[in-house]
Length: 614
Ligand code: ADP
Ligand code: MG
Image (cartoon, rainbow, N blue to C red; front, side):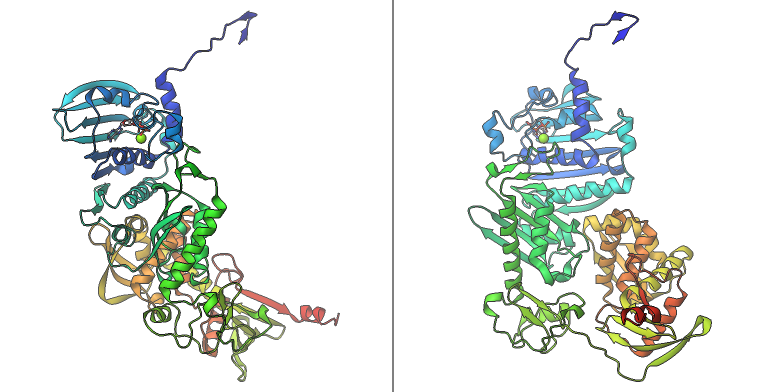
């Protein structure tokens, strides 16, 4: 730079390797979970049949991975920590048809440059192992040590020399969640490898010898229960092979985090493929819900570009749209055939009764059509999921493959309108329920329309929030406490939220590694199966909390939503008026916790205008 007239010469020179590694670490190693992923990938690339993971203080203190793979030759261990050193590819063609996880030779040098790392490795024909210690990218020592065959890597004090990055880490519980998700994703991808995963002193899973099949591993890891019924997907064509297991619609979640996707065994993130899967469930899935499971796609490696991002979670597909459509059809067909639901072609003749053109009255979500003559397990399942079939109601649309629920507007209550007096001495008269969702009232001046679910949700939300703040929720003891097995990921959420759940009346305690003993639920929740409701609430809370919602509010919202009367529930006059009165008393009666309106008012003035009287 020019300075006092003298020109300082600027040399262009290569950066020291240590600095390059530290810069690269910024991209490759963004958080503890990335270290875990890189190291486990190395173990799998090394042909390990067993991988043990031990994490302390959510990875900030230490991350250790022990494998029984091929090990590293004694004279290669230093090279493994130098940049772009890899045993996995030699030329560009190898890169084109990549089947191993690693290939950049970047992970070890990056990790070594931002931590204090110790690696001990021994090959089968070596007499002893070799240990290397590297701190902040500087090799401290390399020496022979006794060791079993395989490799052990211990990464301590991650980011100790990059304070900005260390500060950037989220809370320990967030890092723990990422770690657990990564460990889960990797364990799912190799059902024939024994895995153990211990985090912060708790062993979240130990997957043993028997689990040599994918179905079992999905059931154990994602549902905590070996015998969970799962939909099997199996498809084999030139373009695309699919193998995987997904939950049935009754075992879904309100977020997409339960879907683990892989392309050529590599765990990936793909909103497009998640869309294809969810679209395959279509109306069988309540809106805003997603199935849970693991799906492995095999595509010609030449069609997949994994070199998009250093962390390799994103891939580029050359025929993404075609793969999306194929996957959608595979999911749709498999699900329907497993559930015994007729496809469009063989049920076009199903009788259509009660058809009404005024489709704008349609509300509620679509339900599967259950043919009247159907019998057996599949229809029993459907009945369990969606309630008894309604004779003769429902439209089957052979174009869209969808069954719509009854359409048309119907006022259920034709009796004398009931009245109630509410604060301020207004007299409210109840007219009836529209489409089993909207409650119609009038006062002297206007027509009032209440969304029964949104209104009830708002009332319960405020009740819950008050209870959480004061610890005064009314809870109902279960006759017998029940043990609920959670997936490792769910368990992490549970640990974060359990105290708040308790103050909201859901009383439980950890009972074994990922099991929870539930002994009481909030009084408002007693209409449903406690086991199911518990799982649903954890799912909601996870979702809301991840979306930035405060944990207390997330719990209050979820319980409110799950306990509230639903669209489709029939209300008596007393109930309708009771609801209205309670709505008058809440702080914010105009919208539900999600911000949708609870009540609409049409004044006489507005009606006059609409009728052209003004
Ligand atoms: P990459 O995996 O992209 O090749 P890494 O930096 O992760 O790069 O690893 C460098 C090399 O070190 C690998 O190519 C492999 O030869 C060796 N290596 C790393 N971890 C292990 C392990 N657990 N077992 C055997 N060899 C390993
Ligand atoms: Mg690697």
